[in-house]
Picture 1 (cartoon, rainbow, N blue to C red):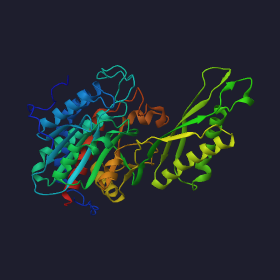
Picture 2 (cartoon, rainbow, N blue to C red):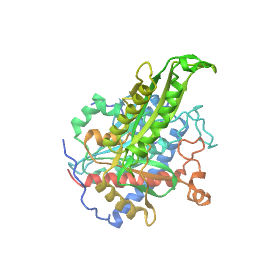
Picture 3 (cartoon, rainbow, N blue to C red):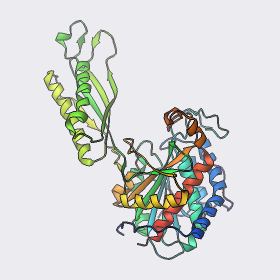
Picture 4 (cartoon, helix red, strand yellow):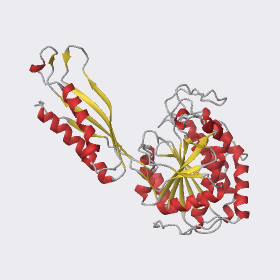
Length: 447
């Protein structure tokens, strides 16, 4: 059972479930020193509760699609703040609405993912996972705590804010199904119909190679399209001593593996970023038996949709060509998993705006640029499906002293490591500050 909320107020009663074009932002003006100081004081006041929430989430991780207690705790925390809360969105998702008291204005979407990973924690932290074999090793506990902290800050300042903040606690990010299920949920669609289309979607993701107290942004593609492809190659089984009487699917599969390596180097323009990796090759059960089929498991990463289609078409062409060349008894079965995750694209104008705002708030040398990743992140689906700009920035999570002492960042525990342990205070403070700053600025831009 979930613990009581970390805020002071009593639990509020549960609410029932229940198009505006996105405009490019104007050139930002730097916040007045007094306003910036007020915001930072509000962040410091929100930090203790956010830290307690972070420790609770870290101690109670749950796998994708099973975020029952996580959702209950997150919803309770949001109700303590006085927000309108909806549960059971897209599975165990939690949606909360913060309505500003400063008059009509735009809607800003803030997303924080909730699920953990099937990893046995080895950090030795006093608040380490109490769920054997499950760990918040990707920082989703940080994301939720930063989101809660930012909502606490914004709620304290709501009288001067126009518009509405749409907070989405999203399940199942690690399986690339959470954003899809939230967006498809009828209750979520009713909420959007009532409050209007968001003008921008915002999120952060902790980084294991960036010092706590800093952030990093990248305009354009930040994360890749992710596809998985399964190929079944059919042959003719037989005795290993008489391969001439068989059609060996292992040989066919091996040739397919090698031929697929030429797609990136010979079928795409030089400099195009993409990946075709065979992560699984299965066939046979005995040393002296040629099996009658083999299976390949492939991951495909790209940025542009045209490149994605080209890669998938080339994979099928290669598989069919090899099978025909070897006289296979039937064509291979090539199945593209329908759970495709679209690339995450950081709108350049909004990214430039946040870069300037964050630089003014954090100080010199605290805002960096990073390389695009071929990893997947389903946050991009909100912008793609809602037709709005989106920005996700990286949040430094490593103790600067540890990072400076390491021979190279790769020597430190990375995301999805059993030893990954963010530096809580500077990580959470910077996350809350940048989230609150980004949301306030987006709300003040008007419809």
